Image (tube, rainbow over all chains, first blue to last red; front, side, top):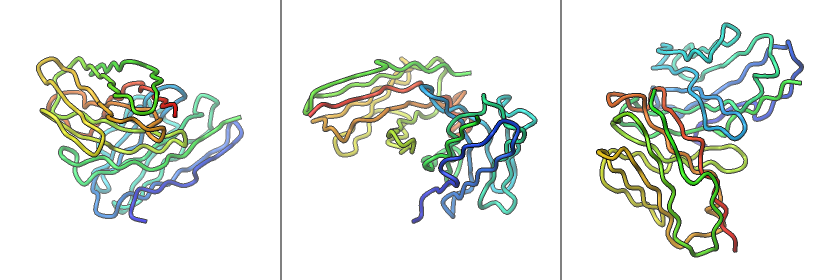
Length: 114
Length: 112
């Protein structure tokens, strides 16, 4: 499978716990994006990477959130001290470049914070 | 920030009908994306277009840059077309995929 893969697909956790999501983009894609989607809404931009460099972070990404892409391949999104408001679908997408490249999305990681 | 509005929010149609979904945005852009999201959550990119019209199978996307409006059409609709269709735009005209703003989506249900 050469698509974007995300892991885990579903995560249920208790408030206050830390969670980490992983995204493996399409191998030749330089750009990697994280989005968050709550029920009934469109996705909202969180952050994006050009290779290993994190180029921008949304104000939605509080200090409890951190994203990395250490070798310019896979990326992780960690949420510390989860809150119920963090419950959402976390979507990863990649593209070969930022301007002309088509976006390819993963299946998403659904987080439920109890 | 580019504001995106989609209409209708929900659309139910009989199999075979011609479907139109509309998207309007507030700030001039370089390209607009149409995406399809199935109930499981995965999103598929349908089109990325910056002018005119694109066609892929039974799907047609058009964009009018001057009017800041795009439409997605589905011909000979089928129950498997049932999904949420989302349009997304960059914040300003010089941006491509970065910081896309997404519409809230149009939920399409095709009845056999």
